[in-house]
Image (cartoon, rainbow, N blue to C red):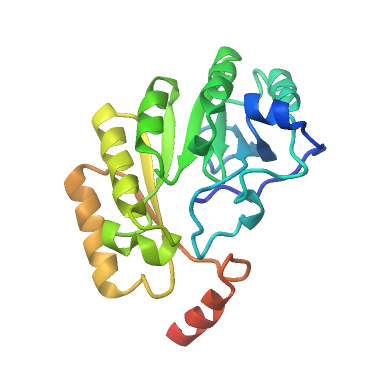
Amino acid sequence: MGIAQSPQLITAAPVPPTSARRELRVGGLTPLTTVDYPGELAAVVFCQGCPWRCRYCHNGHLLPPRAAELIPWAQVRAFLEARRGLLDAVVFSGGEPTLQPALGAAMTQARALGFKVGLHSSGAYPARIEALLPLLDWVGLDIKALPEHYPAITGVPGSGERAWASLRLLLAAGVPLQVRTTLMPGQDGPAQLATLPERLAALGVREHRIQSCRTGHTLDPTLAAESARVL
């Protein structure tokens, strides 16, 4: 998802099923980053689970909603308490953070510790993003393509409509927003490169970051061959 650095696992431990239902399921933690929340020193909490299976995903271990080894939220919170005054923000990434009902409570706790709250999201759950709006200081939203091209990337019908609905919600709310697009081989032709930025600008997107697809370690290993053929 997005441009978040790959998660660094910090003392992962088995989490009892009852605890997993109540608390955020954390698959990784980056203690310090300068690139995942523009202009801020941040920690990145990688949330376990994602409803989509994007072919170019490079955090495949975060896709299952459950994992045998997770970082307990209490340990993440203790880490954040120790970083007050040293870090500016906490970014919730994934996976897809809005998959988890416990996300709002975790964000509330991060704000109570004095941190700004950032979100990296694919926009898979517009209604959940709408409910989180009062807690968000900044959002990095993946817009992968025009809506009609999403199923070829995510493998999920209707995924494009949901992502673009989330985009419209965030724009209407005025939340500071960066839109990111990863150029997947086969979806990176001149027509797409011209049309997508035009559509985003017409909606009011001011910051659109386009990034190349890293094909060395992806969910779909055939992307490397497709990329080589294009080159």
